[in-house]
Length: 419
Ligand code: HAM
Image (cartoon, rainbow, N blue to C red; front, top):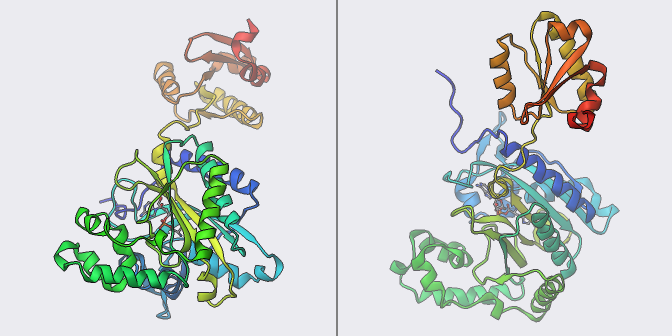
């Protein structure tokens, strides 16, 4: 019996793997233009890193982490997100002493033990950006602008940006008290089981519960945006004004508190209506206290992550690269010549594949047709003797027989231009 794949862990074949490559290369281009450099962090970290950064009372830490002891009994966790590891690396590396503002992006797999469904996996992939070292609202706006440009460059225009401000240690406690007072007047039966727990452990999270009953209750709840202190209000208004100057549309969403505890001030998500229930393609925000809470200096930061699987769902199947040629060798002698010709064509930057197996010309031609190649190249015993190759345009059926030395030129210019 074969060995099964682990539930929620996917094998990524084309076209999805092609989509991933495209997403990463567009990200490198757009983020690189804004000064972001790539950081690769380990997949495994000490569990404490995530407990201290993401927050003990979050769903991620409570129920979704892949945690296990190593051979010495130390508790390790497969990273459920990138930000915590990036902060650890940032503190470890001493970059802080060398630069005042640091811009880092990272890509790769993350692990969360969630119920798998369309757009939600247990191993999924993120592209993650962090801008460290500035409290300026311009950094928030630049990051949002960069994210939206990235999505636009991928052709994803049917997405919407949702924004909120979570305030700071000056104004949030007051809001939390007001929210608690409000929730204390709500009967337990009006809230879902999770929210009955959250109202005591993490009351802000009650605001973003998706259950209709809870939403009906929190429609009447106090709103964070109404209780911001003057500094937080000014910060948020500047971010909005800068987005306006670039003509980006956005919706203010008082429920957007995010599922990770490190956020303050600006928080955001980009949603798509086209990929089902798991509609968030990106999420992020500001986290000014995070570096210090992990033992580093008091360095503010802002960042986001995009889900690659969800971006790929939106991209569809459009990006698979088709080979230019499919080279058929018909017997043992022509096989070696054909194989050498294929290598020369690839050296000339042509994409192509060759057949390794023997077979009738008809069935080999069928394979060539299925490969999606533009041209079928045939080297049989006659062509091998004269060092020629037949180049057949698969769509029109038109073909020419040319010296093998000229094949690259014919493929580059197209066989029609030689009539
Ligand atoms: P997050 O909202 O937990 O934020 O995840 C960001 C994105 O990762 C989501 O919007 C979604 O597209 C994708 N994602 C999350 N979980 C899954 C899953 N189980 N399957 C597929 N895709 C998923 C963070 O992770 C923060 N670290 C973002 C951040 C960076 N904030 C500041 N800097």
